[in-house]
Image (tube, rainbow, N blue to C red; front, side, top):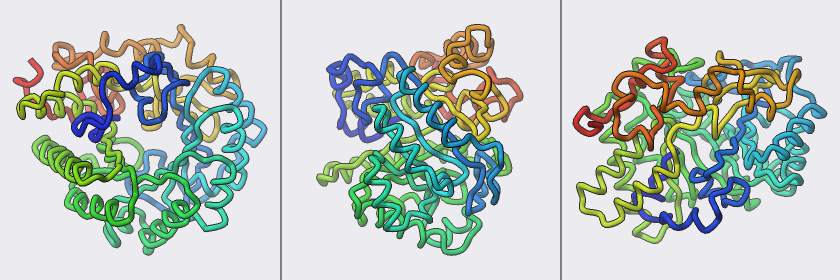
Length: 392
């Protein structure tokens, strides 16, 4: 994650994470990306089922649940292991996690063990009663996926009325005091919707939004040709930075991030430097703390059947299964060649990444996307939009 509001707009200074010693368990959520120990945030796909049919679903979720889903007991054991290992956050995802009726119990278990519990959802199933229940059980945050306004969003979701239902779910959650943010996946189909999404965020008082770069896995492989060009990406980042600054300068307490393209970090720094911003040096220090792509290190994924992946997108790279070994054991397995390389990925990337001056703040960008495009997990990520001059 690259915090546009944190870096470009100065809502976080380089000294802020240092005050907490940069330990994952001690850092507040808005500083977690600057942790030093990189204990993994774990995405747990708790179900294979979804009530929608999103065209860019990384999990290729279907309509029905599988019998291989981890049971409630297995879920409790997993959460206990993650707590003991020091994972600071569990992100309950899917499929659609709210289709799992015991989700509140899993959230309660995580919260009791001092793990922050968050949900990634399409938002359509958040009733008023469920929002009250989730709030009572200590849910920290709900990220709701919206990829446009009205029919634009519905075209991505595959079900008419999805936007209206998601907005109702957002209202229900916010009414119960749960922090809500938006998740927007950028591509040629919806990039023109970004100003409207930011207007919606402003009008409804939604405090957070994550703009995701497209990763060509799951059903999103079909959208590879609809990824933004390098120039379109640069223009979009400029728009996001400018609009974020406008809102923060107007006194809005918001958080705006981009996700899954760590070239955004150097791009923000270079823009600030070109503008003569005196905070540019501090931003570079924060980017070094961030460390770039964290797949297999600071983020991991557990599938509904217990399989462990380096991140939620890289689903054919199976590191192990928690039905056979605990997650903590799998994550520390020094005999797993891929996992060990991911923990020091800067030593293994090839091509222009190898000689890039931003390697220490990007870590070679997104390996799942590089493999999807080139067939080589250590190849060049085609979504890097920095010029040869900018990286040399």
